[in-house]
Structure formats: structure tokens, C-alpha cells
Image (tube, rainbow, N blue to C red; front, side):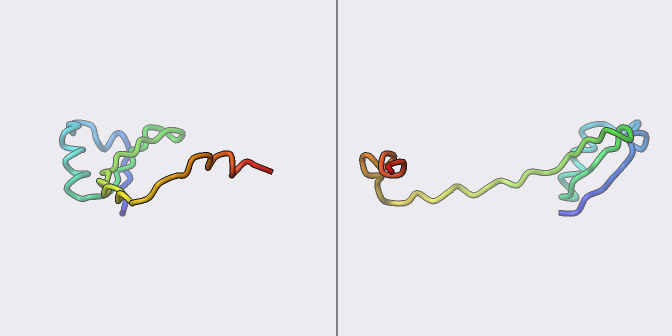
Length: 69
């Protein structure tokens, strides 16, 4: 995923809704430099696929077997 970097002054007059819409539309992160020591990153989050459900079981006492000497 690519990224765009802007200074805070470049976003004056732009609404938060417009910023979020641009990040989603372009599907890339936006880094906003607030000062030389601070930055804010806004990026779209990808939805993860659910993990598969596996068949099987965990036997009784499995934890004791791992830590046994």
C-alpha cells in the first residue's frame, strides 16, 4: 500500500469526511505532519478473512505434559 505525506497546513479548510473519503477512495495511507516531532497516520484497514474451524481435540493434561521435566 502506498502512502501520501502532507503537512497540517495543507489540510486547512478540508473536512474530516473529505480526508477519510480520499483515503478510502485512493486506498492508501495518509501521513499528516503536525510538527517535526508529531505525525498522524490515517489508513484503510483491510477486513480479515475468518480463520477456519479445524476438527480435533486437546487432550486432558496437555499443559502438564509441556511443563513436565
